[in-house]
Amino acid sequence: MNEKTKNKISAVIALILICLIPLGLYSNWIQTNFKNQDNFVNAFSLQAENAKIKELLLDSTYEYIDNLEIKKIIEENLPEALTPLSAEIELSAKRALKILSQDLINSNTFEVLWNELLTSIHQEFTKVIIEDSQGYFQVYANELYATSAPIKERLILNLSRDPAWQNFIEELNTLEPPKIRVLDAEQLGFVKLSWQVSSLVTQYLWLVLIVITLLLVSLQKSILISFKYLGLSILIGGSITILSNYLLANFINSRLTNNFAEEMLTIFFNTSSRNLQFDSYIIILMGFVILFIYLINHLKTKSRAVNN
Image (cartoon, rainbow, N blue to C red; front, side, top):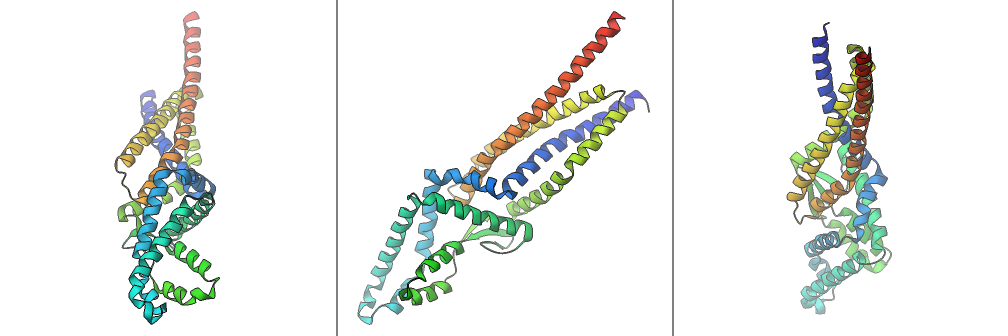
């Protein structure tokens, strides 16, 4: 095999490496931040004091309360003489629930409850993505919805301690908890595909990188010449990751709405992608170091040739 052919094959291998580096970095980011429960919770936990998140959470809670059909329950449990007041009692009950919700979200205990909720969300989210099982997250017509079942269950658990609420609990059990759409069909498909690809990449990437490095070394005259291709590939791959992360962040933020689920996912990306950027800078630094080693040795070789 002549030198020209070897250089062409080396260039093709370098291009493959350039593509593999962003793929590997994003796969590691997905597995680290989605699969690891502690990282997932930490990415959101700081938002417990975020005013906008609290506002959106309150709006979602108020919407849930407004959709509660408790008038019939009130009428069935009220004395006949008070039945005409059922509408006013319903409004007062919903108003009281809203005040309790607001006090809870603004209380010091909200952070603890918030982290408990995030832990449950992570467990249920990974179930539906990995195992296709139905829980608090459910799939309807290929779209992912979050149900308010946890809120309902917690309410029933608290009320069950008082026998006076038994009739109310029985009626509450018959109510279908409202659903919040988290991902449409296209987004859900993309998330599942990303999870599957990232799982495969994180398992086999190091093996592929070792094979590619050995191929480069075997094609070139020396390890130092292969360093040129490795260094450039790593440098370009890391730079592409940083650029794509910047463009993706701008794209996500430009499509931001006042939807609670979308706001949460955006915050998650903006918070956790800092680790991705840091890893990309480390990769770029590695590329510079490899290129620096190559250039120093290349200059030394030229200097020796001139002196001789």
